Image 1 (tube, rainbow, N blue to C red):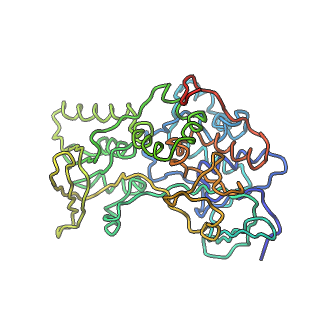
Image 2 (cartoon, rainbow, N blue to C red):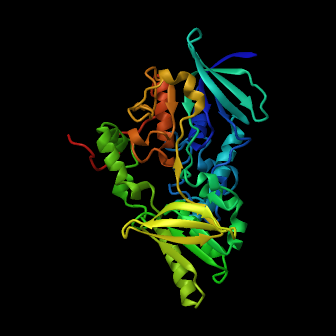
Image 3 (cartoon, one colour):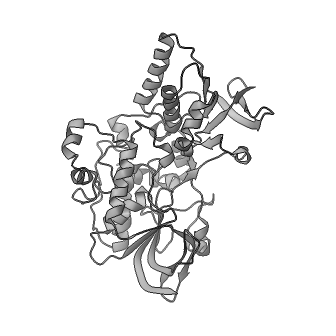
Length: 430
């Protein structure tokens, strides 16, 4: 069974970036679009909805505002629709709760008719006769869906939790990625010995949550990182200018080796912990110590996880190497949380069109400045271009800008304004 409709755009994956694209497509006259996701409904990082956690970007960096501040899908209009706009003004916070952002995205989903949840993509072919892509999809129950045809593809499937290879065989209900933390929070809190591996924002949020939930005398909490220190996220206005189209254009034109060297030194710009959270963790530790609590919290740096095994008693034995001292040491834990970040995996559904895609010498997408990965400017990607466009690829604040660029290219006209020359500093030379 085939549908005769040929969509202008088919989006694969409905995360915040493609959801923002779907919302920006809605008011464009004559543009036909469809967006697919194998999940039954929108849910953004539901396993990390820790109470009190917030976004690391301003509420203005919602799905649409930085491309179209008059859009009915803005966060401010969401507040207006829920009779909370005045309260938000009094609340006077720039960063909104992560759970609230998730509710906002769901609110946008409810107003769009171009979203199909519960539909996965098996493969994509290019049909030269009709000059369009054919998407073979299946419903969540495995039923074959009609072939979807589209002139342009926008891949926004996001990255997946990264698990070191040596740990994958041991993944179970007591060795998890931070992505699933909230599903196991009660079990973790009741465990006598807990180990958190990693030093980014997610690891810090989990540590603070456990410090707040656990009774100090209940057992031990160990926080370990291979980094030489706990990096604080850099928060300064001149550094914020680096999350701009001007910096993207500068970075894009650099030699690949220079790009790699820059990215290796920019961890505090996108992988650090916000200052407030670092201070809150220290203050919590100080408070517990001041009150004479039996503090069983161990924080270690320079320590790389080398091996993990299960003991006869059912615990986990973790072997670390102290990078600076070049010596090994071990700990035992009842529960292990891996805050080891995320990594993009090339989707299998693109294999039939791999010859249309441009690749670099490391087997990664060769992403164009306009976010296309093919010479015909018909396949676009979201949040897979850090190696070509810079550290701000996963930044929610750049989502509306990237979508404006993609749409303007597809439409062959400037439908949405694109920021240029917005920085006080110059990243290149005259």
